[in-house]
Length: 204
Ligand code: BEZ
Image (cartoon, rainbow, N blue to C red):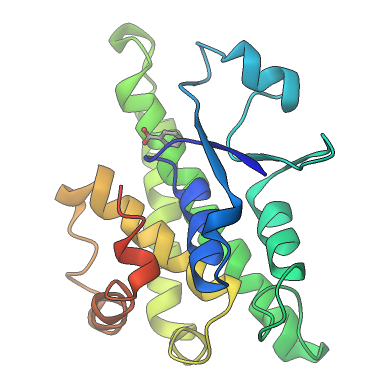
């Protein structure tokens, strides 16, 4: 299977972490894709029409895209405990999905902020828009600290992995924001989570 990849992308990191956690890294052929909103990679766009990473090309040519879809697919291929999906269902199962959505939302807002800062010409910047994205990150982190530590400290799941990758991205691109300062429980959890071999092996 070919994985369209960029080492900086937290969405790609999710895919790599689940591949590590489920013993499937050897199945992945990594294809580096330099791409962004204004400089498309045409070869990647032939596989994934919106030109985004990650995209996974299966051996029969089928292409899967969106990190959630790819992670769920990889999770379907191994025989160990399942990491994605609603598990036994009920509110607890759907809360696990909501944790993944929250982690993805932090990544979305952080990546958009990064694009704004690194790509957009200075004369076109919109400070209020950027502040809105940063506010999404901050209120989501506060929510994690107040309401989600029970799941984060529980069994490994895609939600837990996603939050770990989102925090890793904040450290990578926004080290100066000091997200740990008012969130001691989240900070302590992430210090431990970061020690997992899957996280060490996928550091950007
Ligand atoms: C980044 O350079 O921060 C980045 C690259 C690809 C996807 C998302 C973020």
